[in-house]
Length: 252
Image 1: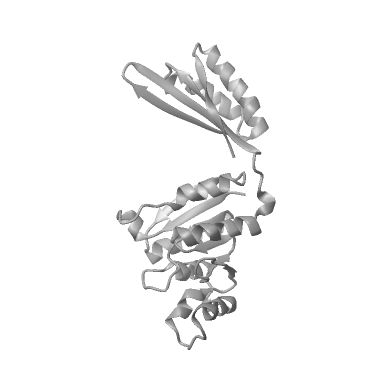
Image 2: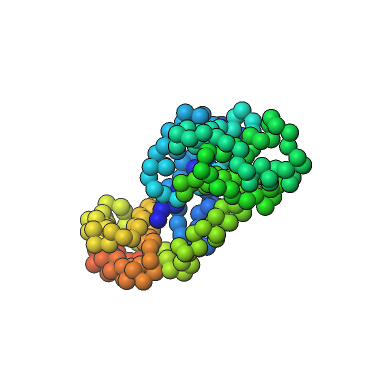
């Protein structure tokens, strides 16, 4: 199964804040032998958020969404999720109890109730920081934009819902540096290699310095398959007359 990430907030697109979620989610997944397939960073535009969620609900991926679930007018993620699914927003009973545990008995109507108005059919994601929960529906997991809240909530989802997918050490990344080579020198080799190993992820990262060219060729995937395929890739590079150097392997 593929994992995706949506990060929502105008403050990221105008430069007021720098996104920290992408590298952290990559790290949290890698610790469990998993990896991120895609990421989208979008603003707080309700139409855009709804359109994005329409696409991601349809794709069948496991998706984490960070940001926009507060109670202020610029927080539109809850409404957009409901619109994308064609359902109503309702105060979630468990969410109401969590609010009452934090703030005392709520008097309706209450602006605080907006914090736990989730699309019908949602489940609660516990928040260990301030006890105001996030929500999940259709394998989408909506958490706050605050890293200190979002990251433990994402970890909770990974460990309580997707523990059977964990496979630490079962995936690896290996790479070599090819000296004095340009991309054009290895394209035929890489095209053939990709056809032979479609399950592996191949990367080609060129580096140029005055009078010197280098390529880092990387493979990522199941450890045994990467180890065997890397030997084939090294032999192909040598057959072209190039010298390679190892890059330290990065296990997941």
